[in-house]
Length: 480
Ligand SMILES: Nc1ncnc2c1ncn2[C@@H]1O[C@H](COP(=O)(O)OP(=O)(O)O)[C@@H](O)[C@H]1O
Ligand code: SF4
Ligand SMILES: [Mg+2]
Image (cartoon, rainbow, N blue to C red; front, side, top):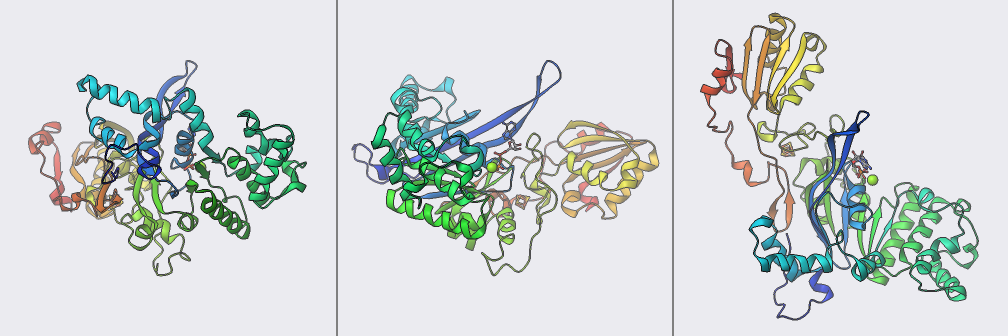
């Protein structure tokens, strides 16, 4: 995904030849602890392998439902939270990005001494989570963050003069009268003025408080600002004013933004390029125009449908079923398959889906005593009696199960009161470039759309019947 400019000719990279921020395979997991010993029993995979870059002067939009990892990613990029995995770079020259593209896939133990030194040099100069000293101070000045909730991000006991002037004091940029004048100038740049210097945050409206937050973010004249839902708590008219202000500031100061919002309409107004996030991963990535005029992911379409005023031609509201799944146990295959209105058999159906289907049917679920999982795709459902197991098989055959889930079943076989279900295992669906920089992680658009179904697997009937030699086995072909 790194674009390398044509002729670098050994010259030092110019600003135009380097990304302001490069996010490379970033992960952020939060451990789940239980018991008196606080043992780690799992992880919330808030951000799970995200890559993109933000170029000078552009606005990169990050959009997705609440809980999909936007804030966590924004905090990692701002240096407020260390990533669990992956790397974040600041001002990474294209030349170095190309070097990392070559070296990163090589396991560390297989790298040459020269390759290791190259990575060490690049990391020391540009990698946000390991840089120190001058490089780190430069980053802290140049990367600022504005949060949604200006009430909690502004200390209620401090005057505006101190709130906005604090970064200048900390970095010993100004003091005394000069500091006051710099604060006045910052306030004026966001539409406030000298008369606001000696007031407290609670004396302002929500929009004005957000202007104060923006003035503070601008204090050190940064290059890059993470805007995390900066207008989500505001009335629509005030929202428009703040968005206009952000536009103007970007034009005047050459700022680069990462603009985070759950609202695709707002993201469209602000962004040059957009990454649509779902459950810790990027589902689709492209220019604002590509995403709005030619979306290549049903999740993007669902977000667009939720903004009918933005895309007037949307005629069918594709309402999404259910809630966002638990990021501690994300769905297999395509993470969106549990809610996707056009999911296919190849999208990652698994035991959890069958159990959820069963549990939504009170009569069938009443007979279920236990679920013995061998893998995400393979389990024995133990019922209280034979009739309960047979009733479930009939429900599957009679078309009660969604057709895509049913066609994903490799085996359904009963053995007394036990029912073995096995889905065809599938690989995770990864982002793929489908049109010159337009990336999607939907099987309907990637090369995997050419895959035949059911897949040819080596573990054929021998292993299936071995699991239940005396069972009544139902093969996928007969369940469709
Ligand atoms: N400090 C934390 N500890 C544990 N889980 C967290 C923490 N911060 C965020 N999460 C979880 O990570 C996921 C992503 O959260 P977040 O980044 O806030 O999403 P978004 O900004 O898209 O709404 C959520 O499931 C959230 O509950
Ligand atoms: S791969 Fe595409 S069709 Fe399949 S579940 Fe995901 S978004 Fe839907
Ligand atoms: Mg958030």
